[in-house]
Image (cartoon, rainbow, N blue to C red):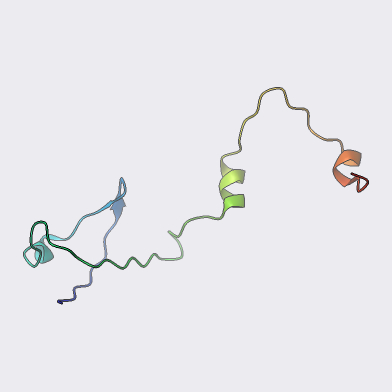
Length: 73
């Protein structure tokens, strides 16, 4: 099994193999892919995602400060 290494950008969920390496591939052949992402492009956590894109609900009433801290529930 031949090994090649290259950096690429993901566009619409697709990673394009550089032209220099395309000749090493057989159409319809199988390849083993290992993806290493940099920390700057790694997926955000759920909390960060929700803070950036809050879920909008209709007819909701925010909790009061007392309700938020009420431990009797």
